[in-house]
Amino acid sequence: MSDHSPSVQSGSASTASAATQQAVQEGRVWLGLELGSTRIKAVLIDDRGEVAGNGAFDWENAMVDGIWTYDLDHLWEGVQTCFAELRGDVRKRTGEQLRSLAGLGVSAMMHGYLAFDEDEQLLVPFRTWRNTFTTTASALLSERFGLNIPLRWSVSHLMHAALQNEEHVDRVRFLTTLAGYVHWQLSGRKVLGVGDASGMFPVDAQTGQYDAERLDLFDRMGDVSAYSWRLRDLLPEILTAGEDAGRLTDEGALLLDPSGGLRAGSLMAPPEGDAGTGMVATNSIRPGTGNVSAGTSAFAMVVLDDALATARKEIDIVATPSGDPVAMIHTNNCTGDLNAWVGVFRRFAELLDGSVDSTGLYHLLFTEGMTAPADAADILVYNYMSGEHQTNVPAGRPLMVRGQGSELSLASFMRAQLYGAFGALASGMRVLLTEEQVRLDRMFAHGGIFLTAGVAQQVLADAIGASVAVGETAGEGGAWGMAVLAAFAHARTEGVADAQSLERFLDERIFADFPLVTVDPDPEGAAGYSAWLDRYRAGLSVERLAAEVL
Image (cartoon, rainbow, N blue to C red; front, side, top):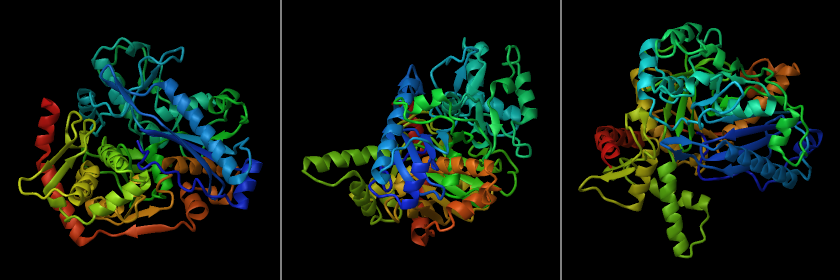
């Protein structure tokens, strides 16, 4: 979920340091591969986190027979193209041919449904997080378990299929996530990092494993008790950050690099979801810290001091890659509608023979937006390309609404677009921070929307009423974070002193000299966003009506 706009490969034209060049030559480099909702990204780093190369492949989900899905053949085409581009970039930066890796890891958009039979064949097309048809199943599980089980979790999808009496359900023998699937194909091991696993089924914060009591509750539910399987036998093994998750097999190496130039045998880190890699990429894995990952969808993660007193449908409870409890505010929509509008302006510029590139266009439009009144001149933007569970909107129907006397200008329109990108997220964060009184000292942000300095970062700070920090890897995102997790796993297996914990590894190895730019909420901007959000929430009935009627 966490690929971001604009499409920028940070530092792709730079020359690597002599130390990084030597690291590539000696195979002391780590690969992070992340399958986001609109881009597959690969990042190669040395042992200090310096980028040695990257690659990308654009892909897109499609609605097939009423279900949002990705074709898995297209997935492998994307992975191979992405790796080939990375290898070319490494050669350009370092002059070295990438032949071996010290380690690698796979991250992907969380949640969804990948079900396999006893012959390890996919039973139904991959059902992504974007599908919102699991409402009844989610509500049933939430009531039975006494905690919020989101629509997009794997167990909600399984229960939905059972409630619908889908033919394939009795033949399920293995469930996994997208990251777990790719890891399995590369290593032969059916495992998941604890953060990604916590989006399949509730994880016990004390044991770091699936909640045993709720597994038993699920298997006793009348809707599934007659099946030949038990849920605990279908789920991947859980590993925490730093554990050995297998080795890149000969077959896996050829899947990544069909040319045969990549050696097998590299250590693989536990596969993680994009939430976990976002936490690593922003060093936000301690209580009171949080991060926002903004792309086609968005999520905010806040590491908790204590468990929440009540179950809230707006808040998911997941885990850091080390297994600590995290409150997640997830939204199905973020930059998709904004990107579409920027595409309209890009075409207009082309018709005028404009030479502005994509990055420059975002900069111009975002900067112009910040000149508008703080309340966006009463313009509301509902950026719902798909249904939005956070605000109970059942289906996608992007809308721009303005008051009868409101002034429509480019500035106010763009400010409203920026506000709308974070609208559903801010609504959920109001529940978490104001109603549940969760402590948040600082929020870290990553994603391409933050690459224009001081714009989306300031909007987010105003929206949530907390300081927001952005670092140099804002555009690298989860692929860089996954590469760091791979480096941590390698250092941990080697017994390196600063790898005794993930927190220490990040503080002393990766982020010791890491530059951050932090902005605080602006009083005028925060007041303007709060007033805008009140109108946004009041106007949701209009969006729901449009989604149901149009």
